Image (cartoon, rainbow, N blue to C red):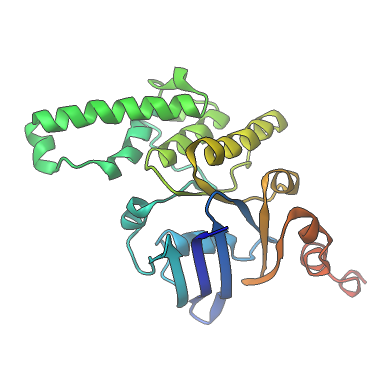
Length: 258
């Protein structure tokens, strides 16, 4: 499968602390992949490097063949990479549809002057953005909450609003940071179906970080395992589950328990 995301030799340091150390990672076009590892392994730091929130110390990041190292987050979003966050980052005082519209604005063409003067082009574009936002809320299964304040919604619905906002940017690659956090078993089952629909119906590749190994093993076609900022294993669910290095990273060596 052709690679959509190619990461080579990615390293990140804060002072004398090396957070990532020579990471190689690839996500194929049309793939559902996961990045796992114990707490502190460097998973969210990888996402922050990919999306421009952190500047890597060294290494290369390419999206659809284009090097994106050092680009600002909004430029990376426009190139086709969107993300959600472990801790929700919604505009709580705005409605659900306004939150999704905020994501869509990265694709607008009308400028600030158009907005100030409320030109016909601006009004047409705002109508189109609202229609797109309604579409994405319907896609994630919550069209009925569009006018409700995001901060008043149940937690599971807030998660879906964040998904809709990310999808509104028209990504080719969607990064999900702990999408199952705070969800009950029924919501997690729906999450698995939604991840697959994003790939199958929208042709969007997915890379997720997740601590729920049942969810990871159920939805992932390829899994990369980090420990102390290094890749220690990769492969399908069966290969990763049986890898002694993965078992050691999660459970520790036998002598450590003595």
